[in-house]
Length: 461
Image (cartoon, rainbow, N blue to C red):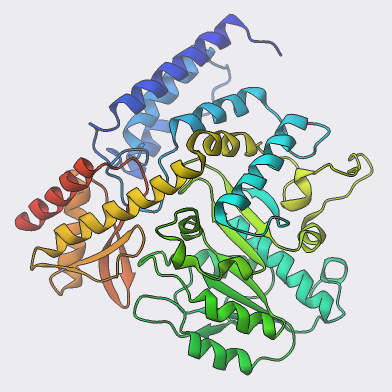
């Protein structure tokens, strides 16, 4: 279908609205102005018999959506580890939608497959991971964890003489899964999806900062027999802490265990010389999961499943059918590394963002966010009513107001109502805290303005 004048008009309207939204994001409140109930009322309507003209549909969508939009692309949004969808990535993503390429295979979409091939190579270089590793472009770190652990499951069982891809888990040797007490919830979901269970894992005690205790890990590993998978963390979601990979990985590999790293945002520390020491030893693992829509600032949704053993990766993911073209020497089929056959061409935005930022730009961005997190932590800690509970090694700051859960939650609620900045709450070590995740378009001025707003709100609480 070609582009009719009415469609071109709708596209221009959408582009103008998007530009206006981004131009005004700094000045607007960083929280949604409508709660879910109000947003639902704005959208709710019976199914119409007749369709509406393109212009009217786009205009209607803009009007109904506006109050319910969060300031995630704004400079003072610290609620979760959400990147700011960089304008260059957005431009590439607009083109991706317009081109309408199905990135399922390299014959149907050669440009999409080629962009992925090159972007994957650049990613491995940026993150200091093995050049021979394979990369699957998935929706995010949740699915990247699923893919990495699927490859792990298949390979450790293959070594034990079992073909899980062909025969499933019924009758398979049991797999020991070792994981830190403070691992992210999505890793437990991945284990659930893969039939490995989220309760039958061996939970390894962690330090005060949420990093796996290496001595406790060594003792737990020694008690394991048979196939084993070790899941580590690069960047604990509250504190930013890293598991001690330089100790854990050699111990695990010496026992024949597969090591999978959940590095949704923390893995990007390896792209920054000033922060790379946090991820020492990570390169020796077997698989890694990380996001593009966090620290690389690609638009949603974009994540990367990285596996050292490309053959194990392909065994776990390849979809075969007679109508799908074969892969010749030197070719790469994107669908061999992800669960989906039909999917968005995420390689375009990834290629564009790395091309735009370059090695130095990525390093500078990561270090800037870490520096701003330390700046905010230091300013907040100057107030005797505020306690910073973590070592600010990355971009995460955990603070508590007084020594009372109810008071802390009230301050968080009032900060959100104020709208100058957006910060969320989390339960950490049995206590409610405010968590600040600095990963967007924040400047020093934004950091200082946000700290002032938090302290002003605390005065009123």
